[in-house]
Image 1 (cartoon, rainbow, N blue to C red):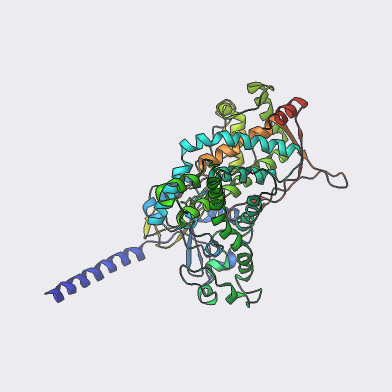
Image 2: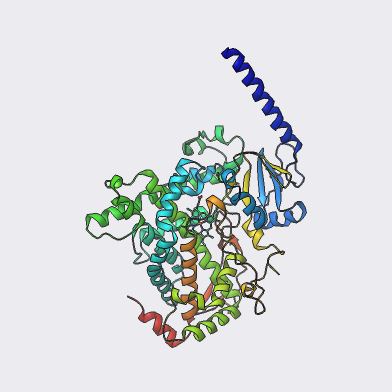
Length: 517
Ligand code: HEM
């Protein structure tokens, strides 16, 4: 009896398989540029500014475009509409991550950003949400305001590392309640390494370690294992991935230390009876974490640091770059601040809604040079059909956020820095804010978006209210005009923001210097 039942089941399964396979074969894949057998588009993959190159290709192949590299299918979504349709509305099957070998090898584990969709993902999202939700974000404004003013003061004291200190200072307050007191703080050294690891490692998922087909055997990589470094030490420098292995060897210990350091800081605070509210303090206080933090809690804390610090630093640096290249907007914003707030006090969050020009500059900073231009890749978990095209199971889906910023059907003259585009008509062009795009999509949307926006706003408004940014000059008295190029990685970062930062007026200088606590 059971034999007959098994027989029917097998025939049924075969029928279903053939039905779906036929359906699958009948549906075309998304359009792709011409490629070669086996290696696909490997030789066509742009070596610089891939988001821009993808955007250019999308003009020919459409806003759902396919690339194949060594058997891996990549789908590039080049419009806001397609990203919402797939990553948000069909989030149940588009929220996985591909295995990002390089980041895993660097020691980011567990880390929500690179984690597959599943139970552990849900747990980590909940951990992040418990401390980064909009209600908490309101509480953080007090120290964000303090850090914004420390930033402006530091810049006036001619200290260029202040952007990093600002971004790190906010995230350490959130994660461990630690206040950065000086530039020798060990957190700043870690932040530098994280910067290198996130901003100089190329497009996520596209390092040779990620896609070179012999990587697993050659690098002795098993699922769940980090790279076995001694095994690859003997590979010649030209071997694909060899240079990245050097990167891994150098940076992995720092990233692993990041997982432990914040916990040690909070334990010390507790031992000394100097408890400060923070994510880790809240976790350690909870019943089951009283002795030590488990790996998930450590991972959530380290990920908040890694994901939150470099991105914020980059956004503030992009703002400064825009102000060097477009002094006219600095003046417009300063006029607005003077008219609305006056010159007798420093701006704070209560002023945000009354400063539309500052707001427009914030939105344009996020759009003009996108900090995370290809987002973090998603992975589709089942075959899907969209607009009559097959998105095959396992395909890696990139939201080309930079491409969306340059979408001419949404943003007029998109490569210009033109904040007025966001002001309502007739003064402006009434174009849509970019903060609904820049933080990604669906179930993987950035968990720190409220905090990030608040950080950028307070940094901008504190600088604008008190500082004047002008071009630096070289040793021959030639004006230096930065060329707006960015380091490319998971996070992009301006290469050059050399400038002169001076007090806007004696009154502004007095206000910011007197504010020091
Ligand atoms: C201007 C600053 C920032 C930008 C532009 C930014 C952008 C992004 C983007 C594009 C993603 C990928 C979303 C997706 O997969 O669709 C992301 C993910 C993430 N962001 Fe941010 N982010 C910023 C700041 C922050 C901050 C301050 C934090 C934490 C305090 C943070 C934590 C995260 C985390 C944990 C993820 C991974 C979420 C997941 O995989 O489920 N980010 N962010």
